[in-house]
Length: 127
Image (cartoon, rainbow, N blue to C red):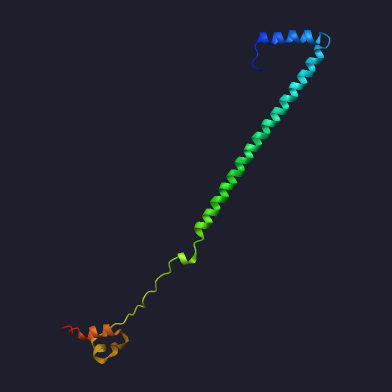
């Protein structure tokens, strides 16, 4: 107890007996016991308060980390509209079947001029 051996406690008891006297020694012992018990309760309460504060700090730190992660996620998701590449427009698909008869009659004018000229200059298929 308190790092004292048996011999040290015995010396303290003898000195207390001499100083206080045998009549008042039980009363002083009781008062000392109450004081030690009160001190122990106060130190336990203080220790619990520190543990509660530590737990509260841990919870607050975790909550702040979660809030920061949420902000980071929102920042990554909320990309400005300018940063999103707009799709390039595709040229219209023209599905025109041009036959020899259409080329000869000039019906190929619906097709692009380059295509019509290429078809007109192409040799006729042999039958």
